[in-house]
Length: 299
Image 1: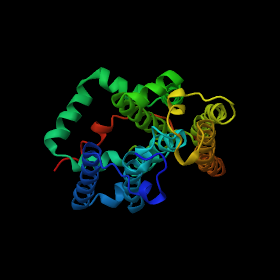
Image 2: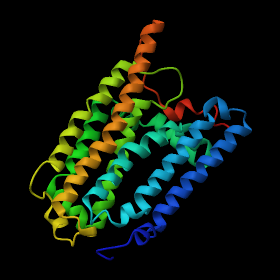
Image 3: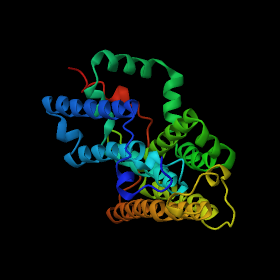
């Protein structure tokens, strides 16, 4: 890998790792099969709108951008690119995928020989149901989301991910999983009319902004390099390690904060709409997704 790559050489450094390509392609195929199956049963546009299918496709494309593009090729060389990659994995791809209402579509796209055991396990395994409901609690989702961001940027742990590929992969999986938990509470892609009050979801989303702003400041303001392993690399494009670190903090502010602000704005206007129409907060009941989909999954 050249220390001074040209613009064109960077654009052509896509990795196309077979495992990632296979997982993304298989997920897309299952979703497409699910859309066809729901359409065959006349339930397609009642459960999933066209724009939701587009959101899901954009979510898969954003994962491909983060994991296969030059962002992944150079993420161990430039901290700023690493930060951009993490933001996509945690704040861009998960909400897009969840806006695609994936559960009914993916379940409809899977063979019944797989779906039926999943539904039985969900109904008959108390600890599995309890774990599912626990992870969807706002306090748990918030803690996992913020803890994932802060924890993986502890200098010793962050530098270990640059050396050990397996740990680097685990880091990416944690970002995606914590992002799904967080955005599940915000978006609530579940069947039925039961939803949390928008005001509660607004508080939940807004309280994540402060830790992210502070972390961006930790990267952008110090005069010392926090990650010596990165400093040991020859700088790309003449970018000094401390400038790269500061750029990473700015990337976190410029890309992460607008997403949080837009999300908070949408929830704020939803809350105002509920207040204007006199809508009372609807109670939340624990929803067993697999059981709730059992009826329309019959073929």
